[in-house]
Image (cartoon, rainbow, N blue to C red):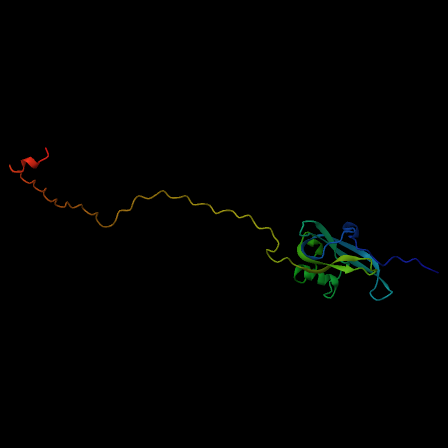
Length: 198
């Protein structure tokens, strides 16, 4: 007797949002757009035929390329687990730059910015490539932020010209120099009268 089993290959919950668009490979400043949790998902255990019920989460990131075109890329689905060796724990540690705190709601990361590296990975069936998240890290301080407008410093008023400064020593007193006496006109004698032009 053949028994119809529930499918165990669970597709990414953001596949319809992303569509067929292929995000470009490279490193970008990205924003966490959405986080979807799914509870009680039946799937096949790793390297086993046994089925298990798990709680899964998936992150959707958005970024713009150098031309300003928007793109989206999703993480793979990860089991919700606080184990330090779990995929989710390592993912959050890379995203935050530190180990996540226990009891913290990671859905509060919506709107969080990070550096995201996208790589193109070959599909298992060989039908092409898909965009995958290769690396995550926090955005370095001041990296990729718009410069703040610079407000010019207020200009101090120009002071009025000051009165001329008087020297500390007394002003020189003009001294009258003796003028030489005018030269005496030569006496005209009776013999020189005829030589005078007037």
